[in-house]
Image 1 (cartoon, rainbow, N blue to C red):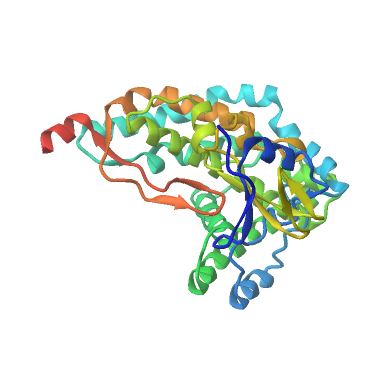
Image 2: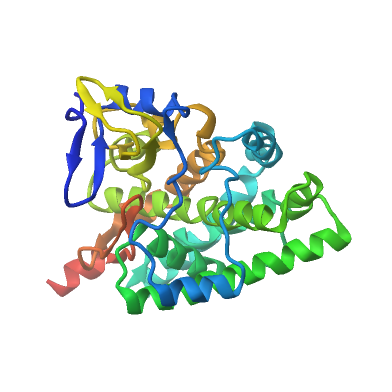
Length: 354
């Protein structure tokens, strides 16, 4: 099975490429298909929203996902050390403990007749706690991080009107202010955590904050969403593996590129300066395509796989006896899709109420 030929989508405003072989070829050619637009706002930001961001010096210079320059390799190497295979493997016991505890608490609530949101009760916090552990970060306001993450994803990949943009911009500015305070502290005291490593690399404050901004979002919120998607499929009666979910319905279904020059994608000529939307999942391609390929492949791929596998293992019994109370509302953004809420009850409760 393959995707459709490359085509321009008037509604989205992108050239859409979802044939897996073509997507792979695009990602392996960052000189022609540049990542400059990877973290730009999909919906142009209003003047009011831009003023809120400007007031805190908000800036996202090229660092990781949006960097095709010479600095990319050094920044990526510095961050990759935190996600080495050995470090990821060593964090499995912590992951299992965090998930086991939350599954047990959710199971008790279900047994008592409560309805439980599995996103909030099980999937939300463990990925954040695990990635903060790997990055050596403590004293991070967890509830705020989760809220900042969802708000920033909506701001940059959503469809907010001007009023909503203003709300989201205030949230993003608050997050950026926190990142600046951690960067300033790292310049004073150094350290071996993420901020210390980035400061030690000689990056500017704006570069350190830019790395922290999307790493602290992508390093945990996308995994929460992947776990939520996997839970949804199992509760819906589908036996799945992590690889199934990644191949068919990853929480990051698309990603963006922009052409540096006119180029042929298959038999289709795409002009210079064209914004390209790559379909990463659900088009018959391999599971690994969900994490990208080439120099911008997701650094947290191994961690996301581990956490989702452990989540499915820990929650297997709960999921077998759970039934959806409602069709879940969705996070439905340009490049992020997952259940926003998974409200469930037990099979026994469902039977009793029929």
